[in-house]
Length: 288
Image (tube, rainbow, N blue to C red; front, side, top):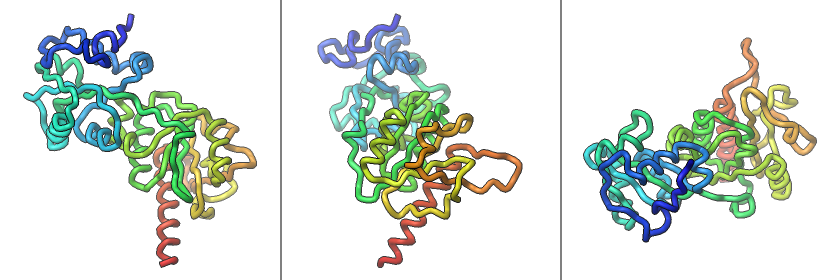
């Protein structure tokens, strides 16, 4: 049975253990390792962040680091070293570990010498702040961490203002998704909601809703992204739900000139995001 993390000191300072852990059988190490499991993350409200680059981006975004486990003998890379320094300077709770204890925490073969426990970000639609004429991405039902991570990296690069994970089938803050995003899951505001709630919120905000679907009436390049716009993408196997195919949405598609009839969702996202960026940059240049 899962042992509650707060019971062994993740939250209550009075229960914190020694500042160094050598044994991989230590209760703190075992409880932290269980955060690799979705059930443990859901029960505790905590997530694991592996690697210096991802950790630095989480810290910059204001994510609360509860504690970090550091194996100084294997800390490698400028980002990992920098993240240790940043955490030390901030007064965060750091626990030194032996290589054996750290090996129980590390992500597969990834070996940067630091693993952090952080509180799961909890942004909501009501708390989301968006600019005038925002560009929002809606990802419905995407389950594969690799696809989610790739979409988040592209969203960050293309200047997407927020991402809504609608009816998510996987854990968007799972270690695989965080790693695949290279930490971009923390650099772009992300909200989880149902599709119905997301569509209602977008309509209240007065945004144009563009749904990427193979049977679209319009090409992705024939519509304007100049005003407030939401780009909706679905899972490759099932596409978007009927929620996003009604009269309130405009269907857009990419030309398919070969024999295949679908693209990887992250590829579709990249094309649409950058078309929006291209149009907006062009319009901005014309106004100068």
